[in-house]
Amino acid sequence: MADLIPKDWMPDARMERIHVHWTAGRHAANATDRKSYHILVEGTGALVRGARSIAANARGSGLPPAAHTLNANTGAIGVSMCCMHQAAEHPFAGGAAPLLKLQWDTMVAVVAQLARRYAIPVTRATILTHAEVQSTLGILQRNKWDITRLAFDPSVVGAHPVGDRMRLEVAVALDGLNPAPSPALAPERLPRFRVQGVAPSTLTFRRNPAGEVTGALPEGTLVERLAMSQQWWQVRTPRGFVGWVSSDFLVAVP
Ligand SMILES: [Zn+2]
Image (cartoon, rainbow, N blue to C red; front, top):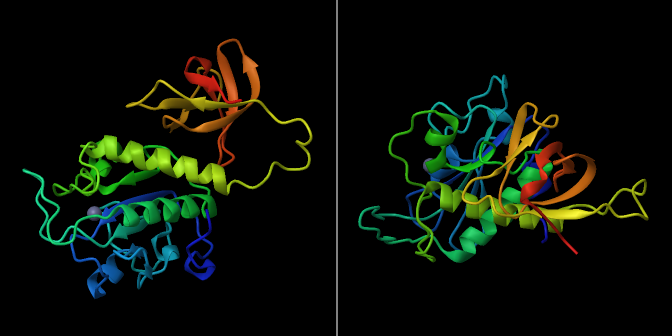
């Protein structure tokens, strides 16, 4: 998948999370949207750069951040899809500018590129929708439902089901973006596996066998096996993160 985001939109900064939103506006970005988010995805799939730099949201930047998530903007990149004007949650109605499949697909590519640029792992706690912030990060939000419904696919309902689908698609996009294995690893390719059988939950990622939890791998994540210790395997994710997981939920990829 080709890179979409111009390089100068992604300055050097230590970023920890990506939050994905919708604007609750029309399919084009307006001035308020540009102030609130770093990158906007319009209905045509075009990207619009926000008024505030991603680096302004880095911890200790001293600059006013893009305020996209209540009390959770530090370290967080805000990506938003321009849509859902006059939409309703119950009963669901997509409104005057429903979320389009093209916007969703573009958002996935944008999030994958940001994840690679800022070395942000694909976990529930690090790449999440606004609707997941309260339950996952424990930071109270004001009844935010972006994104609990997909106007183009009514079969997916709820904050985590939608978020898990987003992370799975981002992980798949990252597999395609991942650079070729380093020459040191060639010519022997490491055995590869996919996370399978954990959805709707995730596979716990640990510093040591049965050790401290450092992340969570969503269903479908592709990993390379580096080492084994009984049922614990040390694996590397598409983003290059190394940790230990239970082998019960890994299926070999030919
Ligand atoms: Zn939001």
